[in-house]
Image (tube, rainbow, N blue to C red; front, side):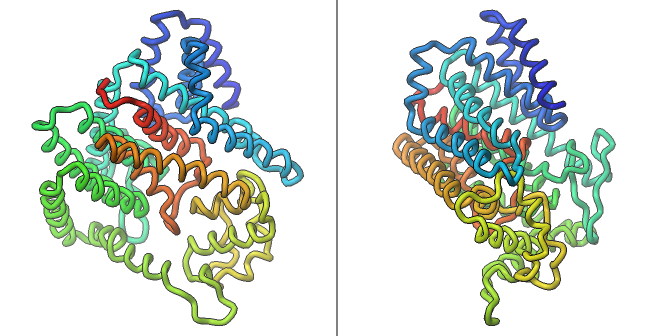
Length: 439
């Protein structure tokens, strides 16, 4: 059904596209992209496929040859080919054909978006500023939901263990913080890149304070940790240390004020004190004989342990994309899981990037995957240092937080997560290949 809708959408676009109209449509698509991610995966997929189609309708042959000869793109092609080969070799295990074969749309999306950002055919500054407004409205909606119990669309809070989880525009899908973080990183980077230095510092301070508090009240621990990591590095590199200290004081004041409220108190316990305990538990080493590092009384570690066992059984190629959910049901994997979480160690994915890649793509896929990103991160950090490009540096620091060991994460190959991740990646790729001039 999803694939059919995408094909219909592409046919309509190709039928209507012509010259300047395609560029006008492209600008409109990019403006609508974050909104579509809030309300419809199908529309988001159609928009991304549309960007790819417009690219092939507008790109010149010589530009296409230059793109294909780029080392990052060649690496990207190798990764895509491996996913297809992995599917074919794991065919008997019935892995996901759509995840494996349709992954090709993300390299094409990265190429297309970065090409248009470099082309001058679209208004980069306007688009990034608009995305910032969307994030600001999303944050205000979350704060409204926190105060009244419902957001502006009537979606209610979710009471969990004495505290409230907020989904905002995503309703019961409690992943709004990842959306906010990703587009905030782009928007705040764009402010430093395109804005006037005298005026942008206060704007960045206000914007960052609102986003930090909004992500805090969602109750999403992993994304809050990633945001704090990003903000810390970004403020230091962007010479905003004085504002960073002021931001900490304001955030601490809000926490102290809210701590008297029972619901908010439980939320603060979850986001700070429980986080500290989780980190301590994650780093602890078992002293019992025959118990490995992953043998812990922890929900996520039960997934990690199961994924590690699957990897050891299928070390070369893994079990194929989206197949952790199938193999984790085998009772044999309960044996090395803590007794408190036996028969509870199965899920749609291992909730950690490394264990997901190891169990589903094997050691070969893991080497290709980490080599690709390691090389890309190295080039971007080097470029951002040489050009003093805070925008690129911030994007890369944020992408690198996705690779934080033992930090719980959504599936890397889930369509919604992937569309957001590769958007940030594409903008980083654009900045990496752009000379030190503003668009």
